[in-house]
Length: 216
Image (cartoon, rainbow, N blue to C red; front, side, top):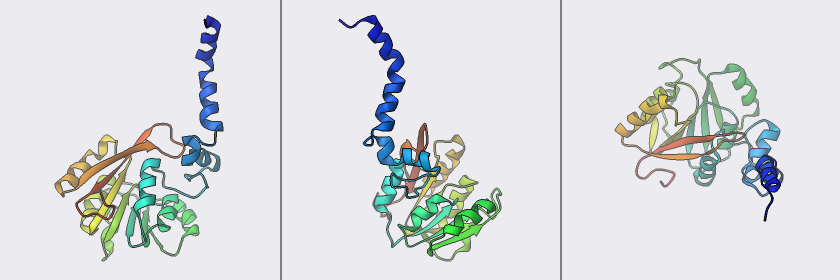
């Protein structure tokens, strides 16, 4: 029969035990996903240290699997994610409102990335940056400012197989984006999980139509 002292010990030791099992064992999700490595390096990455978007690891896995070099991408918001996408698609156009950050991250620019600076505004030049391009895009990432208006502007610039992703889509203020997308014939696939260094469940939503480039 177990003594009450053993039960009390387990009650108060469980944080230490769980930390040992999740942090120190190399085969755990925190290690395999890159969560621990991201914490160590100070930027979102996989377990090898290669840059990834600051999105949940479930959606990152899908993008790794399904993006390819035939695709053109537009990204609202730039950063380590831009470096990740550049390895997987034909070319990336990234718009950024933070000039200091843009100057920093663009120093590592691959040849297939075009960086654009637009001031932070609402329903202005930032959300309309995508309309300055004649060509259409297969994938658009909405992970910057003024996201609802970005969604409204990007739809006309999607290719016939185009899709777009809205990050942090659980936020109530983005409900209008869902309504607008549905009115344009898009279906929504919510993908949830933990972000690099994150402590809660985050959601990214993929908006798609029939015959899309991700095969959804």
